[in-house]
Amino acid sequence: MTPEVDLPDHLNLVEYFLERRLAEGRGARVALTIDSPDGEVRNVTYAEVLALAHRYAAALHAAGVRPEERVGIALDDGADWVGAFFGILHLGAVVVLLNPDLDGDELLGLVDYTGIRMVVAAPRVEERLTGRATILGPLGDHACPPRANTHRDDGAIWLFSGGTTGRPKAVAQSHGAFVNTTVLTAHGVYGYGPDDVTLSVPKLYFGYATGMNLLFPFSVGARAVLFPDRCTPERVAGLVARHRPTVLVNVPTFVGKLLRDAPHADLSSVRLSTSAGEALPEALFVAFREQFGVELLDGLGTAEMWHVFLTNRPGQVRPGTLGRPVPGFEVEVRDDEGRPLPDGDTGWLWVRGRSRALGYVRALEATARAFQGEWYVSGDMVRRDADGVFTYCGRGDDMLKVSGKWVAPRDVESCLSEHVAVHECAVVGVADAHGLTRLCAYVLPAPGYDAAELPTRLGTYLRARLQAYKVPREVIVVHAFSRTHLGKIDRGELRRLGASRE
Image (cartoon, rainbow, N blue to C red; front, side, top):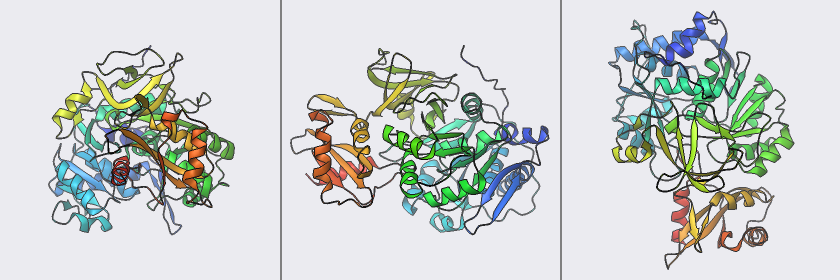
């Protein structure tokens, strides 16, 4: 039987994730542990988080922010990020999650596109926004207005889609969506409890981390560890040693970095480690489990459904797959006409559940294409086996027709990732002079391997393991990959580079 989450008509995330903890008598529990680069560690209780949220709400209200108005957050992870987040929601305004490390043009582009008037920004970000948005000043001692009596379907947070090409679209999500997924995923699958301590590799502006390292732990009175500085393997290993997290939130790229640069990290405290954002190669899953004794739960979520709705389960991982749907979500594989496909066939991912977004911001045609009644039609292609387990095949715009046959770049990337000389890789299609698609593999070498010899060596390796039409015509060694706003490899840039070589 499909679980049904009780979502009252009037719902506000501040009440659900903060005020209820105080009503339960948990106000004195530690909600946040802030670990600064200088070694200072500060604990913040649930009561203190709520007080800080009230101060932000009061300052924003005094600055003229009103219900349903958009307010951007461009802060480093810390108590102020969390206080501003809940302060905006307290007013019934809408949070817009911004990456503070975006360069000036990218950040201004998102600010202009979303029509943000007010931004809570880190000092290093303020100069990039001068003249384009008002920066919230000191909090002061203003009186805090009553919490807004928002509806469950009112807009709460705008996230940005995580595609690997083009400008990201803002996705409008409601208060109800965040509570629905928290109950179904955090409580129902991951088993979050009050004794959990969470630590995340991705930062809070990424919706995956907003859930795993803020809303999910706050829903049960657990503790989240935050750090404002850059995420490195050495830093994360030190944080794990110091704070002994039970939940480690990861992404595939960083999994590889941990294996390479912090192989002796002690993850014995970790009961649950997740991976999302990009597909997790089976070779990385195996290497991580063998090195650290922790299995990674790979899953798939989208901004359009807010968070993970397909995931492997603890103790039931099928390496190289996305596992099964989270109870409460329905996932289907369909063809180009929207007809269900049989098990084993590759098709478009359709998903429905009560966490479906309200739509894209200022993109009516894209909204009409992606949101079909109760269903969200993803740009991802998947297949389901007879046991109901899903495997990710790639983005639809990344799938390639080579020699008349479909190729999933991920299949080639998974093969490449198993080679000891490959640290990271990406495979894209490039049109040749005759308009035919050829495969190009871009490879970041592992330390100590000769870049000059690598293309020939990897070509031989791939020809021995793949069908001929799946073997890239060219292997190109790179020193670094261009990244999107969420840190994914920018495949659009790789296609442009490949075209320029023609």
